[in-house]
Image (tube, rainbow, N blue to C red; front, side, top):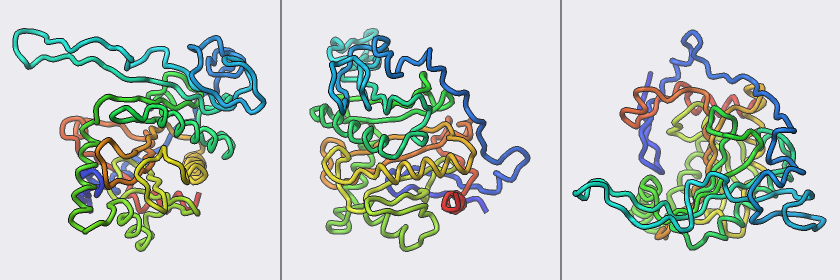
Amino acid sequence: MPEIRIDPLSGHRTIVAGERSRRPGGEPSCAPPEPIDPARDPFAEGHEERTPPELYALRPDGGPPNSPGWTVRVVPNLYPALAPDAGEPERRGDSELLLALPATGAHEVIVNGPQPVLSLAELPVEQVAAAVEVWRARMRAHADAAYVQLIVNERHEAGASLPHTHAQLYALDFVPADIARERERAGAYTTRTMGHTLLEDLIAEEVRHGERIVAIDEQAVLMAPYGSRVPFQLMLAPRAPRPRFEDDGPSGAALLHDGLRRLARHFGSSPPLNLWIRTAPRGAEHFCWRIDVLPRLTHLAGLELSTGVNLNIVAPEHAAALLREA
């Protein structure tokens, strides 16, 4: 029977109705993407002049900036959504209702590797680990921001304007409402339980049950969240809780790569997806970082857009079982 599940971390409600995937044409699937044309790829090694001047790069054998020989490369976004000096607040009209604030901050692109592939799953695990360490380094470089959001969009269907695998970093001068809500829920849980960490207790509970666990290694746990918003959603969390992803310690890169490879094996190719890092926002005393992966196998429709309530047609227990087999 369909049921409403509440995500313990965010409070978000999802209707889980697994029977709907058995409708004609209802089973989630994805078509293989078109390969990258190396000649048109601005992120390809040897095309450094096609991007803004780099901010940071890993070059194992040395070499000057903006030249070949890099393994991970960081450049400003060519069409930034944020700017270091974005002007002053401006009122539109005579009342206080229409206010435009300056979009102050930084917007960077992190090219995850020189290989012309569309997904992190197609990179060697060592390359993913190197890319993840650069993600952390760039998050630390913006430690003075109110919140730093690291995202990965894979394939056009998930919002990627360029196919070559890359991450984006947004350094914001405010804490977004959804993240502030998670901060409040985490703090309230710690107060109510006299010192426990919300995500740590959630992972312990999930490991005890086991049915939504996909894989575990020495660093992290990979699972299909209880309140998954979309089919085959994944969450990675560290085995030892830490507030900030960007701090030293295990990153879970190998298990992240494993989870993305499992998705690719199950669907026959890497699906369109959005991935992001949830790290401790400013003012969070009791928090634990995690990585969320949301495949884009179904469309947001009227229910989601009008209410904010998701309709998930694949129960997370079923998704986890399929991915364990992959």
